[in-house]
Length: 391
Image: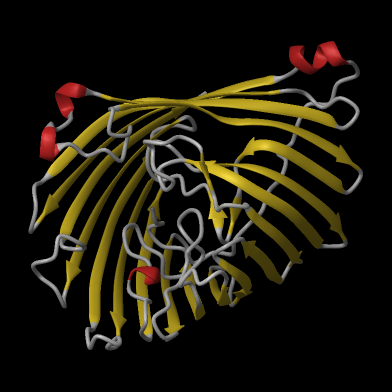
């Protein structure tokens, strides 16, 4: 699954702030219980196949232990259940909300953490938001990972190392629960730097049996006036093939955004250089590219060809109401079979914050396959209504 538009720097957050306690018993007494109730309706109108729809209700319940001598932990349970009266049957059934069985129940987090001075460790099922492994929380079930992660912070730098074995969530497929990332897992390392004016990320991934990948980006915000600011970003992704996987890519990107009071305008560009009979790999989740949209990412056409993508976005905030629009153009040169690619996507978004706890939103996605109008892929419209109440 993909993000509507991604123009911000990838972030990595190991531990949230926690209550500190003085004995083991108080770890439970002073622990925090939080949760969310969410419901989502998603309908597809496809120009060349059966229309489908589904409505689900579910959410999450999370308990986190208080910190004792640097140790803590947490668990999270997530569920999604189709509402039969508001869900299609047979070919009209949309299985992306709660699996082909119409229900999904999973212990999505279960971790132990340890913190000592600038060192933080976390082991177990957890959320990750990194360039090639991220939660991508835009449906009922976000991605989470079975991983071993360590981070050390010093003078604005963060040093990260870890291993990711399994994952679950909408992007992993809801029918099989927890699945292997690759045969031998994913090894990762990163050096991140941030100060008041610039953020720099450098990530290395050994996606065993698939590819070695290097991802880096740099971003800054220039304050032009009290009310006007300019965002700038550059990114680079290089993937080298392992074990004849067919994955090899070099992708560049740049982004810019102009912010004036409650209005913002953004422009993003990515270019993928052709690797003969090879394709790019967006990782486990929505992917890091600046031009990733709700349905479409450059990976879809960056196979055995040069490919380009442009995304223009506008955003307006009016008190508790946010209106957004994004237009994306994805085009690919002829591949070795002489076939070109051209897909256009539009995203219309409305978000309304009723209160600090209740959020209502809607997304309308239009995809047009300009090179293949009779294909079932990217010739569709997706309408989603979402409500979330957190406690």
